[in-house]
Image (cartoon, rainbow, N blue to C red):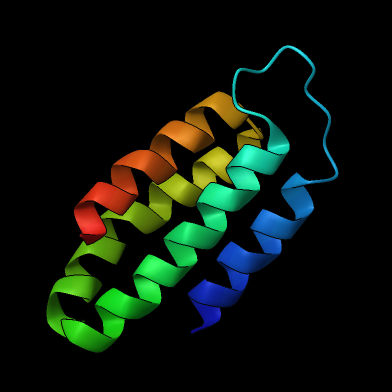
Length: 86
């Protein structure tokens, strides 16, 4: 759940950045982050072992993208991650 807190904090902080030229707005990235957090919770409850495997793969990439603050890459990550969590 510590990771979930990290995701939610990152999602909320994304709203403070303004990227006028980005195809993926901070609001869109925030919405995707919240959907990702919900999908993570659902997966953790329904299939804990598969959840752990998926998160080991996703967590390092997510942290790297959050540090870069690249909205386009972050939105793409969330789209791909949501597919993996389905």
